[in-house]
Image 1 (tube, rainbow, N blue to C red):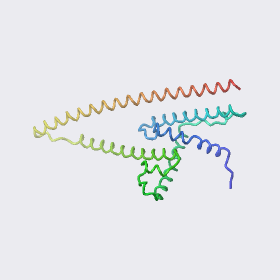
Image 2 (cartoon, helix red, strand yellow):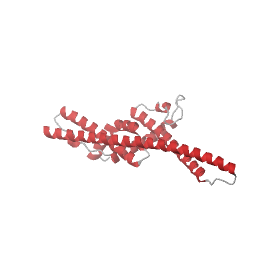
Image 3 (cartoon, helix red, strand yellow):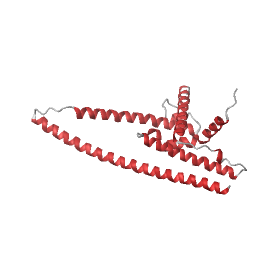
Image 4 (cartoon, rainbow, N blue to C red):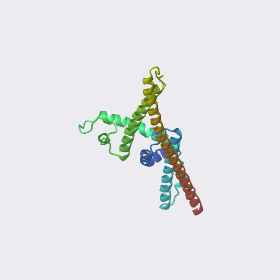
Length: 227
């Protein structure tokens, strides 16, 4: 049997070290469920920064308690790598979930992916969090499908040509049009509020990213000055 390369072994050790924090951060921020690709990328980078700081802190603590510095051995994690890592963790988990549910012999645990009872099939916190993420992803897909269907129905309604030959129908259609206009105005206000919240959230995220990057830089400078 071939011996694992040093790079492969180091990568597996890092994955094992950060996977619980990674899944917890994904469960908190849900980058994979954001509708905007830009928003998704920003959140993956934010999670990468969080994990980099966690690894750096652990390495500094280990360096203080030993004669060897672990800081120089640390890789720099980025958003795409973290996303790829999470996707693999989630894909492997889904295989285990299907296997466990299909082989479940307990009458107390129902066949319901992502439910609290299904979580009872797992012992590790990481597995339970992944089970919750699976459930949330399924709900998100269902919600997006409903929104798409509602948008399609609205398109059909607005594109139908009304019959104005009868004056009574005209007044009824006029009232209906005014009502739709009022509803659309309310929807626009809601969308504007949501957009403002998203902009504020992105600005807050950018500020947090800058703060964490500055902290990273300060830690590196402090380490350099103590050598």
